[in-house]
Image (cartoon, rainbow, N blue to C red):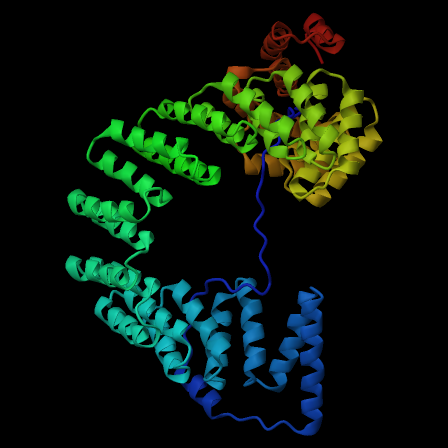
Length: 586
């Protein structure tokens, strides 16, 4: 059965850089082997050293060119010549980690540090891996060693404190931060971390003392006063928080962070009118930048949503902003999203339209407009939006796809084919899955237009790019079955779709029909009956006709006639179906 066209979904691919180190699991190293390797010292003769250097620099060159298979081969040659070379051990560890051979990767990283214990880079890599693994004591051990080797590197002491904290040794973490503080003096990062640690130890006054020290050092800095107020507010001490907010207000009454803190304060004390007034005052204040106002509004929206309050109360604030900044289209984009949250699609579309007109080369405006009209399947509006978008954004694939889909659904197959081919030729295909879908749609359209050879070529291209493109696998296998050719290939492709989505009635029907064409009538009956079971809400004439054909082949001729009649009732009107009903035969 032909799989219907669906709106393209944005897919985000995760790309792994070969130099990235990911989490690895620990491996047991036999003590005897470890001891032997510690004692082992390979003295390379001149010839062996030349070979080692040749392989090593060849491996580095291959890696830089992206020839990773070749690189790992050459590094393994190096390892065979000198299994104690820390550079080689690190390189192999990195490769094995990416190849998901975690035990080997951890082994290589540990040994690289064993043979080059003072190497800062190797130690940091090992510490990071141990941290990802949750090997807390090993993280502490590595950072403790590094802090002795590199006492001038203060970031190591900071990491050591974090390692103690992660292990639940809060006092040791504080001691490490105190040591760090002797070198750096009182600073924000250290103080905030000590505040966090004291809070976890439920030593609240010592925690607040850390921030007080920062304030004493910077008495005119509103940021720290506001921070102190926020911390007291989180601690359910609004009266003390207000004292610090008042001190901030005396220094800078228009300090943006203070405004939101006051909103939070009024929310905490259940004074919603005061919270609204505070925001209104900020929005109408000409001394505050529009970007800051937008940040305040965005954060205020988050507060309203978290507290499940009516977000319509921000509409008047936007009205004030539009009066002050009539040409700032970013306001239109944000307000459009706010109106969408309020389910005001008409108002949102108006705002997105203004944004798109002001920023014709930004796809965001058109995409938001499509977001509104796509669920409603308003083909006229989809066509209007995508046509306008492509005038300014001829390299954006999504607009070709949606425009082609409009023509497809209007059964204007020639125009749809033209659009998809133009998209393939002109658009930047940032996502290979999207490119595969374009080839798939071109295949479908060519088939409808009678260009079977071109259709099958497009399907092959689609599957080369994405072998798991289920709609292509389904359609390609179905059309092969109709042509009664390459049925083994069709059965294999269709089987992949059923395995991926075992309750999809379209895929089940296609698989059943391929089995039917192969002569496996009993199996075909099972899969088509499943297709009917899972698709009973939207049965098609095509499926019922298939079922009738299968029943006829399994000797159930009366039941077959019933299904053919059901197919006709569902809209089937082919001459072949009429003949089956009239004669009671295939």
